[in-house]
Length: 125
Image (cartoon, rainbow, N blue to C red; front, side, top):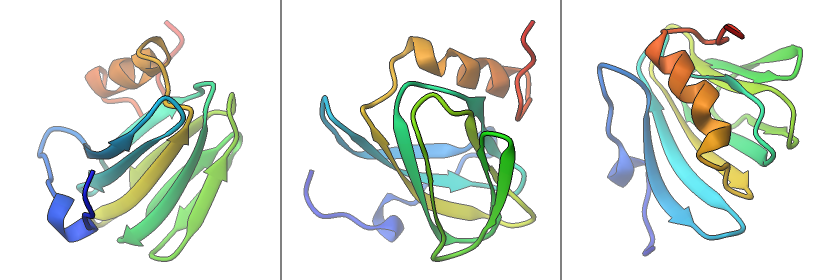
């Protein structure tokens, strides 16, 4: 992928957070994430590390049992297998998310379920 920027990739959706892929290999995946207030990536625990770099706005990043309040300049890394999620709080949130290795389609099923049911923390049912 050629050089890009948060501004060039910016795309919001009224329905759910927007993830604009900027790079993917068998080793890692990079997306620019755009969240309207209260939009989120549901809590899930894929077998990949993730690093969230907040560019604009405020929100929370779930890291296992901890929730980190985040603002521009904050970096939160969560190891593979640990529950994680991202939610915008009160304003738009923009972040770069790097996962290594990229999660599988099956590992993203809790994300799809949580978005469908509008649950940050999907139920186990």
